[in-house]
Amino acid sequence: MRALLLASLAALALHAQPQVQRFTLPNGLRVLHLEEHERPLVRARLHLRLDPADLPPGRQGLPRLVLRMLDHSDAAGLKAGDFDRLLEGSGIQLIQGLEPDGLEWRLLARSRDQDRALGLLADRLLRTVFDPSVLQVQRLACGRDEARQEAPPYPRLREALLQEPGSRPTPASLGAITLEDLLAFRARVFRPDRAVLVLQGDLGLEQAKRLVLLSLGSWTAQEPRPAIPPPPATTPLPATPPPPADAPGPPGESSGAPLRIPAPGTGLRIQAVAIQPDDLAPEAAALLTLLVPDDPAPSHVRFTVEDRHLIATLDVGTGAGAGSLFQERLETLRQRSFTQADLDRARTAWEAGRALATLHPGSRLETAFLEAEGRGVQDIRMKALSPAALSAALRQWLAPARIRTGAAGDPEALKAIPTDLQPKP
Image (cartoon, rainbow, N blue to C red):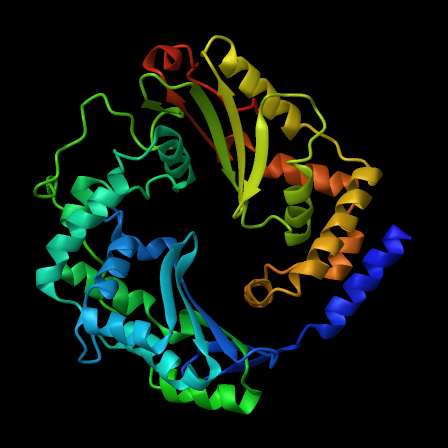
């Protein structure tokens, strides 16, 4: 009866889900359109893909600084403050952010304001003028955000482990970024043929085509600029103190030893982060997201999956034996063999979750974007997934080379943490 109810709910939800319609502008901008008229709202998500070649060596923090400059520079003849007040006065939400694979802008507006909203998004993207006088202020602000020395130790540990090796901004790398670097980055990355726009809400297909063509149809790729040269040997960031000589470097950039964050008077937290492999099947990733936190083996180590990251956490009072326990538990999970019962249970839970998610506008927007990027779950592949393939996917995700580890807590407890916390190959 329960299975029949879940199947009925899924069928109703999928039947009610709008079909994704696709079109491409002459400039190469890909657009996905989801027509819904339940509420007088329009949502948009614009994603600009980042490639490793876009980030020159020695310029860590360049994408973050570009976003800060966009947020604090004049656009379309409006001062930065006036631009923000225009958004607020119009009831338009425009949020920008840095994702693991690109830059994103998310827009929410009433359907009657859709022309103005998408026009303001275009102004921010295409008609923002970088002010050289703003650069130094935003460079210092970016450095303070990255340092976060005042933040609690546990969030600092997690944030440090989530960062890609070599991507963590330093005083030297931020100090090396010039206005020319920002303009060169913008010329390379802000291209319509790198962008995907998802529109969802109270507008028809022809209306969406007109709206996108009027606001973003004039967007063209700039002429390619020469590659950014390596930074000088010493380019310190003014007014930013250098890190202590014995401060730990970013995870993954040393010999593999875990990151240590001293925090006198606090308990010990050991943590490991493994980012989802790009070639991991979306279907396996969806089921592992449900199965890993539900692991039946008794342990004090907690497992979660958040935004394509598998995170293991152990909280203890002292470091005695904690490192060995943590390492052993990681290896036990990595070697787990799933059964057909595990697979069936996860499939049922996933189908129920999908049925509910299709009722949420934000989830539908996310699903459409993932499908456009080739990362969407397909029913035929989900049905063909076997327990052996699921077990192999978990071992791929938890490969020792993919795991970054660290610990935060009292300095005496940190001394007992071994130099290797990863599972054995």
